Structure formats: C-alpha cells, structure tokens
Image (cartoon, rainbow, N blue to C red):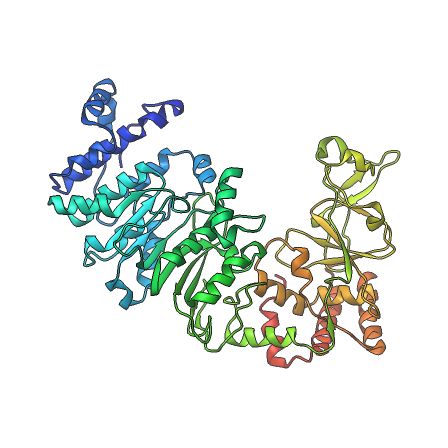
Length: 556
C-alpha cells in the first residue's frame, strides 16, 4: 500500500469513512486480479453512488494505491490499521498474522483432514481460510463473524482467491459466510450443522456486560463459574459443532493450559478429545503482551489425552510417548518432555510430604491507592520502612523502597495487621518467573508486589519450609506446571514439602542461618546456595540425571 505523506482524514472522521477506504482498496485488487462480475460484493461495503460521491468530495483518495498479492490479506491489514486498538481490545478481536495462520494449517493440520469441511467461527477478514490450499473447493469453506464488515471482506478475499466468475460461486459466498453471534445466535451454515475442521483465532478476554454473562451462563458449562473468558465458550460451542473424529485447531492464550479459571474447558477437552499438537508461540500479536499457542485436537476419546501429541517450543520439538493423566484441575503438562514429566511425577509422589494448603496463612501486600501521597521517601514521625518485590532475593531482604504510616483506613487494600507483625514470616515476589522467598522476624510491612506466607506445619520450621520453596525442586514444579509471571497462592499450595527428621532439619537450618548472615550474591552466598540445593535434592531422593534436569530451570 502506498499513500501520500499527510492523512486525508482526522481520527474523528475515520470510523464513518472506513467502508469507503476499504471499497477503494477492494476495487483496485479486483482490477489487478482481472475479477469481474463481483460488484455486488463491493456494494456490501458501501453503495456505488455513495462511494463516487465520497471520491468526488475527497479526490485525494486516489493517492492511495494497493498491490494485490495472492494469499496476503491486504484488506485485513488495512482494516485492522484503521480500527483503533482499544476497540479491538473491548471485543477481544486481534488480527492474526498470516505467518501464524499458515503455521496452523501447514504444520498442525493432518493431511487427511484437508478433505473435509472447514469452518472458522470468528473468521474476521478470512485470513485462515485464505491460507488453505486452493485445491480445497470453495463450497467446503465456511465462516462466521459478528462484524458485518468483516464478513463482507471475507467474501471479497475468497472471491479473489478462487477467481470466482459464476452466480453459483457468489451464492456459496453468501450462503457459507454469515453474520451472527456465535455464542448466542449461530445455528450453523452447513446442511448437517457439523464441520470436519474448526479452526481460527477466537476472541480473547472481550468485555461482557451482565446480560451477556447471564445468557452465557445458561448455555455453557464453561460459564457457570464467576470468571468467564470468551475463548473458553468458543471452544465449548465448537466441540458441539465438530463432527466425530473432527479436528479443532485454535490459536489461544497459553493460559488455557494452566490457569485455574480455565479448568472447566480443560475437563471438556480431556473428556472428549485427543491432543494432536501444541506449539508455544510466545507473544505473537503486535501490541498484545500475552503468550499464545496453537492447540490442535481431535474429537475422539482415546486411552490417553496426551499420547502421540507433538509439542513445539522455540528450543525443541518432541512427541509425547506415554500415557499421562489429564490433570485438568491444575494444568495440562505439554511443556514437559518425557524425562521431565517422569521427574515431575516422582517429585509429586515423594513419600511423607505435606503442602501449604490448609497449613499456612497468606497475605497480600498493601495497596495504598495513592502512592504519591502515602508512600514516603524519607523517615518521618510514625512512618516505618516498607518493601516491594524487587527488594526481595532468596533468603534476603536487600533494601526497602521507602516509608509508610500504617493507616489501614487510608489504604485501598491491606491485610490484617497481625499478619504483617507475625513473629516469623516469609516474603516473596508476586511478579516473577522465579520463586524468591526471604525471612523476616521484624514485623516489616510490604507493598502489593511483595506478598506474605506464614507456614504453620507441625514439626517443620519456617526456615526449613523457606529452603524448600527456594529450592530448584520447587522452581521446576512451578515453572513446568504454571509457566506464569505471577506467583499465586494456588501455585505455592501444590508444592510437596517433605517431612524431615530433626537431624535433616538441623542440617538445613545450619545452611539457612549461614545464608542469612552472608551478604547476598557474594561468592560465599552462591557456594552455600549450591550446597543447600544439593542437600535438598537428596531429601527428594533424586538421581544425578534428575538433578541435571533441574539445572535447566535454575535461576538466570
């Protein structure tokens, strides 16, 4: 696309002029592709009379030129660049890069699946359908979207892809590509209302009003609990519309694999499908900081949800060879290779263990609601030191971030004071990829980036529990099960903590006391950490090969 140096329209004019700009682009693409007889598709964007009147008023529109390229969604790129990103966030809709849609199709769809019917329930401008091989007949493609303009663009894109010339082809475009709310108004577009392959990138995290939530709660198992994410509902609805043995291939947030609120959809998938592949994409969407995956499943109940699934990460590719338990309550375990999975299961089954669930008090740090007024940079009467997450290292409180007067009524959020003033407590960073716990006996306060846990396990000292939580064993379990930048109470409550004899605890506490008396991050500190970590892995009875696996997950 080429354009003049100065925009011809102000932002407040843009919304009403988008259809005119899209028609201008589509006409050029039709001309370059020698496509005739499809003017009705252009009329769906804006009528010819209105378009020509607009061009007469804004002759500078002719400074914009576009180049047709097969399998490139020029119209989609133009549309998403014209729609403000905040509008897309509210609807949960983000443009899928062509590279991601091609990867889903050519890396993750089984060859035998290409003979079936294809349906994209939130097709946008048709990017996934455009990338399918041209050998697949048009009549086997179906799409739906809530945005009429998107469906109009999908029809134009597929008219270009298939170089349609007949009224029959136009009829297919209008019959197979529909405008409706997939979750409350969609009834199907094929004769059987079932599809062999359902693919695409459903909306993520769109904002829902109370009325919508009530409608969805009456229709979907995945909406019965308090939290609702719309992509879960898209998955559930798609399972109903998928043929037996059919393929579901979606681009989804990585959170679907592990976050607790998505446990219901994990159960649905593990009960009715077999996983074919998972690819970890990282942050694949421009201006969207959310790790994503390509998740491909077959609607078929097998002996194992996992066995045979291919896993692709940026570092490696492997196939899951064994049956694994589909632990939908916690997380799917795709991120683990076979040896890592065996190690994870061994650690979880360590005999004579306890967890923090029901055996600890947890507390959030203070949310002032007004740091500028309430957080002080210098000591003053009645103020005391307060720390934040970055002040925490393993075993050590490095510094403090400022001063604060403990005035609970002035704070937006605070825990009961007795938790801050506990005789012994552990601080940990809330936002971090690595577990870091520090020890406090001074009643120190913390801000909300630094949370608190107070272990209350009979027979186990707080310092011993801290050593376990700081160990490479705990880090391995946390990283492989949750892959989260937030360390949640629910995560910490799953870590198995071995009961230890008095001599073993005494040995651990000897290391911990030395660490507490040693300056953080000096050579002696790191040597003591390594010795303590090795001692703890022996408590879990790990082999040298298993210890080597843990090193891959050690702190950077």
